[in-house]
Picture 1 (cartoon, rainbow, N blue to C red):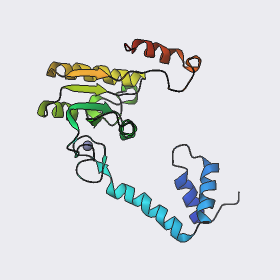
Picture 2 (cartoon, rainbow, N blue to C red; picture 1 turned 120 degrees about the horizontal axis):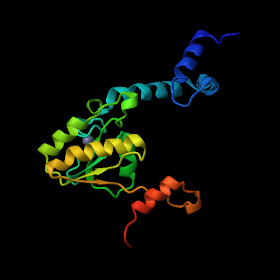
Picture 3 (cartoon, rainbow, N blue to C red; picture 1 turned 180 degrees about the vertical axis):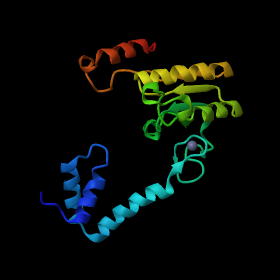
Picture 4 (spheres, protein in one colour; picture 1 turned 135 degrees about the vertical axis):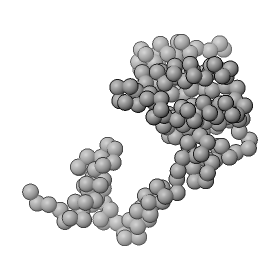
Length: 199
Ligand SMILES: [Zn+2]
């Protein structure tokens, strides 16, 4: 089989490592980049390196941060008595975009999953409990994926947090806004019924 020149093969094999990118897409990206101005490709490569060099976990909540603390933790206007627990920073950023939540966060770094060898000590649970003991927190809100691992993680956290005299709540799971009820699956509908609120 005719091989591409070595630098091109190398780029394709690196691009193939990205999630959802197979050989065909990797080749498409590689040829696209090859046809760009050198300056444009240099900007992309600098952006790739900078994201690794300049972004690290926030010392308090493990959100993405450029300084020691992330923008949420360093904002004096946030309600420090509320902590919302998420598994990854992406979910935190989604919640932030709603502009409805004014408390702090804690990023676990995943969900408990004994089958995949993810145990409490692999997540930032000890760090969360330490925060709860040293700060004046009145409520912990769990915003974890509604999957088996999310539920197991939520139950584990609730058991660990309640003895500290702190309220633990969970976000309601419901029907996607703007969609017909008929399109929602049964589990989603059943969760939406359980999480109903008076109007
Ligand atoms: Zn933070």
